[in-house]
Amino acid sequence: MASVTSLAASVNQRVADALSAALPEAGAADPLLRRSDRADFQANGMLALAKKLKGNPRELAAKVVDAIGESDVLKEIEVSGPGFLNITIADEAIVKTLAARAADARLGVPFAASPGTTVIDYAQPNVAKEMHVGHLRSAVIGAAMVEILEFTGETVIRRHHIGDWGTQFGMLIQYLTEHPHELDHKGGEGTEVSGEEAASNLNRLYKASRALFDSDEEFKERARRRVVDLQAGDEQTLAMWQRFVDESKIYFNSVFTKLDMDIRDADIVGESGYNAMLEETCRLLEESGVAVRSEGALCVFFDDVKGPDGNPVPLIVKKSDGGYGYAATDLSAIRDRVQNLGADTLLYVVDVRQSLHFKMVFETARRAGWLDDKAHAVQLAFGTVLGKDGKPFKTRAGETVRLVDLLDEAIERATTVVREKNNEKIALTEEEIVENGTQIGIGAVKYADLSTSASRDYKFDLDQMVSLNGDTSVYLQYAYARIQSIKRRAGETRPVAHPELPLAPAERALGLHLDGFAEVLAEAAAAYEPHRLAAYLYQLASHLTTFYDQCQVVSEDNPTEVVENRLFLCDLTGRTLHQGMALLGIRTPERL
Ligand code: ARG
Image 1 (cartoon, rainbow, N blue to C red):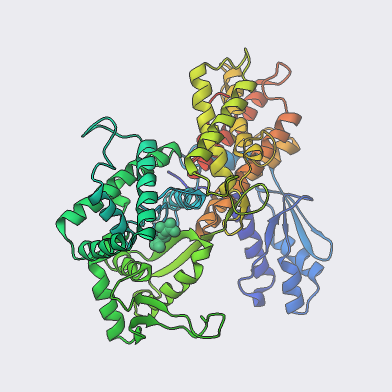
Image 2 (cartoon, rainbow, N blue to C red; image 1 turned 45 degrees about the vertical axis):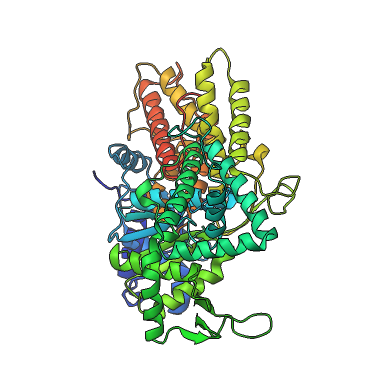
């Protein structure tokens, strides 16, 4: 494995060196290099620097050009405008760099200089409840961040903080105790139950027990006593609780499998998993004075968190009735993740509507000394999924949309697209149509989520998602499949890099973009922004489209070297697309 220095990075280094040689008093200055339409790169750094040192920017730029001197990488470098540098890379350097990338299984992408350990809290649905689009976002964005960070060399520990604890279990368990056959499986004891059946069992039970809880005071009282039994660890009550958890996991797993997502049982550590720590967490907070008693509850106060009436709104770690809530669990989880798992970063992929909760939890943990310079926590907050009408996503009847129904519809629509595009030349079998339809449908849903900045709300619009044109996963998947089809058409001719050949403009643009893969990955990893990778891949596919339009690949009119070199560009584009999409959790079918 050999990491490859990108052309942007080596040009940047050269200009920076020349800058300090030409202007030693400037120290280490950033040349501010970026891609440009005029040349390949433009460096703007001379302007600010000359201004600061009261010099003439054009003169400074000319000095820098002199200091750079001759090089194999640079074809041309000229001063332009008020003092920019326009830099053109030699064709040969582009192809040589790409050949080095192609020779590496990681496409020349380096590992991070000092990787750490990140715990990612994502894909956290709630036991005995239906999964909704919010859970989809957490799962999709979280899974992409897991892959991207692992690719940089980070040690990633996954935590699915499922909602498997709390007072609602009193009601559920009590109901099941009184109606013992409600979770029995249709096929009889010991038979497998489908995710669909598990979900509908749980749903029915939830609704029935809720109705009873709301209408029957005596049942309510029995349910309350159940909560006490559950918290006291009563064996029979716990066994009942476990049935809900197990049944829910069957359902979750069926959805995650449909999402083509690998969720491991060992990584599911729900709220109940921190139960044994709650008391100690509260004791430590109280002893250190971080939390104080207020109206019987154990609370943490913040100067800048106030309610509409101007009164402070505390984080309640222990309620006045002695019960622990969501916050105590999250604080215990922080202690566990930092102290036992050795994390230096805690990343929470959770709805933006929980931002205040996390702000208070993180601040409390800092005051308690559980988070500090060595261990910090970040919320990767995501926005709401909206319907086509721009309102929060609901069914016509006003109910929350079931995630499974959405995924099934996406698969169905994508399958229709694949079937319609199929012809004698592609000749997909029915089995392949169904498989591709599934990969495209799921890819479409994931990509729609990953291609917009997570913090923004986004419209769930299936028509747009499975469209062949525009910024969709289908467009990227077709680009990938097209490359594979060209390679098949090339028959015996293989992809071979020919650095000696001159490049057409579309080849250069594609090549330079390919060379930027590592930088985009590093940015996406550092900023927790998978949409940067999605945008890069979309641009890559667009460069490929232009390249096809302008450059014939397999053609009798082309000398063999030109065919080989173009196949090489196609091949590396395909591998980059495949790698990038895989990091986003999206498949790339070979034939479409
Ligand atoms: N189960 C919660 C929900 O459905 C999300 C859990 C987020 N993670 C956490 N550590 N609080 O809203």
